[in-house]
Image (tube, rainbow, N blue to C red; front, side, top):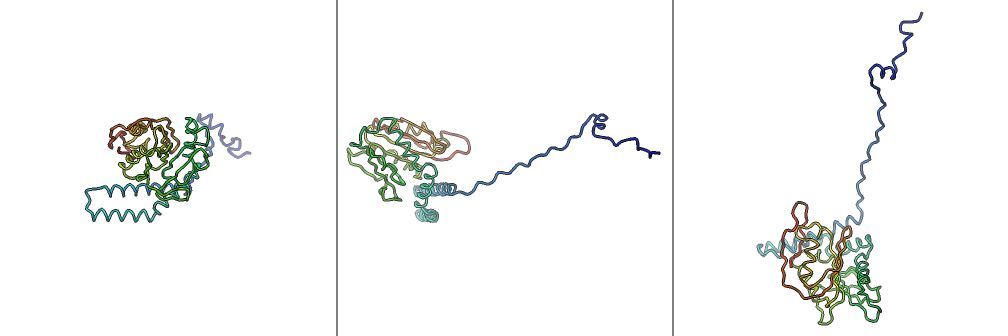
Length: 290
């Protein structure tokens, strides 16, 4: 005789489903989400950090030097401290080396390529190389225009890294009347100056070195215009217009703002003080006082 329960099979999942109206499903095989790997500390990231820190230190140095409320002793002590920090980082040599490596990683001659393209587009390039355009490249890491036979380029910098660049201070760079340049290029130069008033002086000096109907090219980091409390693209163009420069072309890349102006008129007596034009948090304090 069969033992009690021999004629009853154990309940199956199907029978349980009929009795309870529910079905147990196998647990899903969830895949663990991979945590994003930290970005490697590449040379480019280090260079950007060096450039950023040197910008901050130079700005602080200019601020301390122009602070009239400080005693001579206190001012000198702060200046010495900041200059020591700058020298520990390598000073201007480190800044230029980092800038040069960064330029190599982003096309090496990004600015010069854009300048050449615009000069051809606006038919500024001469028909022949008999009469070359005189070009002044301010703050040049190298002479990127020497390979163009229709350009006679003078590249200047405070601390030349090559013999193709002449040592000169743009603030004191003088040209004789009638010897002004056909083209002047200021690529990532204005933002290196820490004092907003000196930035304005740099723009004013462009009037003295650019010939009538000549062309001025300016390149700035995009955040200086797109995320500043005190400056916008339009305000920057208004400043140049007050100096007699008309905007011909403007282009924003991922990190830079490119401008092409033509000197078509005389300067107008209009001032541009430091004023808030963009409210809200997380804006930078880059400004130009004219």
